[in-house]
Image (cartoon, rainbow, N blue to C red):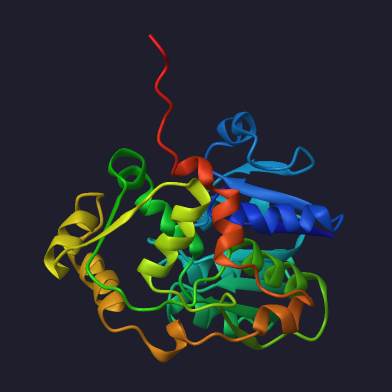
Length: 278
């Protein structure tokens, strides 16, 4: 049986692909540019790369042909066309779906729940990979600028993928919504301390205002409404976002990865470039 993974080169999608391949499964990876994905070497060689995007489901008949399992990552632009993607997938013969939610039960998540096939919704809290937003300022200045210092039960993307793989391949997970966290709830200052030890460099925490944080996010191309929503989430974190749960261990059998493990895997992003001797 073949599994189609959307968002296959993204922060979580590539981990889903890798975990399925590790388990010996046949995987079809959906990407806008298969040649670039292959050249980058971010996906296992055994993967079948297919061109396309889940935001254009009308062009995915060939990608869905012969697929029995589907992993959907809810991203910007999918809300309007996601239900059509689900309809086409079920019509093509998909019988099991995992959906990585977009932060709530929107049109895509609801379409999956109403699809009539087995489904599992993954509801991770903050991704550890969000820490990569600090990389440039850490490398160049040894500084992290954030408006708030509240705790967050961050989860490793590979743990999200491991839960997705179990739900796709094993029985007993249909109709479940899994809240996913890491094993610790850490403030930015606590994360900075872990990162500082890993790269052996002092890193300062510099508070900024809420509006400065919104402006910084908008400068990356994020619309004002979305930037307000994201920074607002950090200003008033929910109980779910700060409370550690052991869902990863319950589903996969192994404990959730720590933030220190994530940092050890990504230290090169935060280390200052070496200056060559003249």
